[in-house]
Image (cartoon, rainbow, N blue to C red; front, side):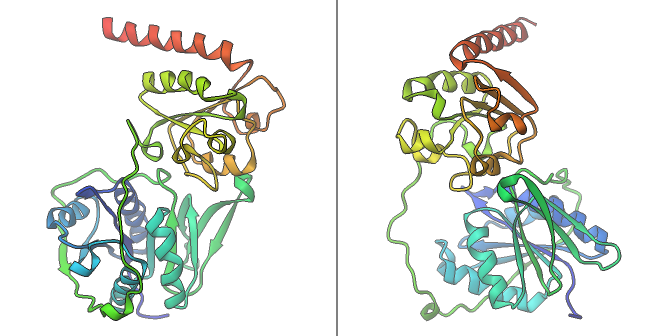
Length: 337
């Protein structure tokens, strides 16, 4: 396994900017590279990639940024992106390669690992270098978030994806210096088996659920779509987003994109408020990265209380109005001060 050097993160671009997961990847990538005494590399892939974004990667910690810019990469397609990243990886031979636990990371990571004859660990919440072996210890939730397991891959490159909002980015430093290298992947069009027929943008008002620092989530006990209006009022006061467990989505009380859990979205807010939901293992797996969990449920034996930092036993119809009024009072006091 000689010849493998450095940490490579696969950045993502969203609406012309670096996505938040990219700066988080650069943060943990810089930490791992520092522990190994190696360099941090980043790759940006697409069509018409702005070199300003590559420079931003340097400001956030990268020593070298590889730009793979080709018209064939305008739309995300598994075949073209995997092929491009495979060529780059074989060329520079990184010791470690990191993706975000995003749609692209979940899709590309395992396929790339198979082509490179190595392993991959998805949805990691902590990454460390073992001082004795110089291998990366990869920690991820298992058993529906009820335990954490540590994995080690002895083949190179060591590939992992990280859960959003579990890693901290470095402070932007415009005095950092680095290199920008344009890499030509020479992808054959005959190797691309799919094509984009239509792109439909998800219509979502306000803050995206996965980006929100505050999430107010309702469960089956809300009883119907009317109950979610209270949750929306609270979320608006706290500048957060509204989510739901699986039953409200199945009953069409809220749109499907609001679902949080293993079969929905994974969230890691600073504050998660679970209202009238029991706390199934599938749902808890989707909120395990939350910094503070508050549970409101009239059943004192509800499983959500086993993971909550704060709990309120009571009917949400009585608890929420008082809580909302208190939030309004606090906001009014802040305005006056």
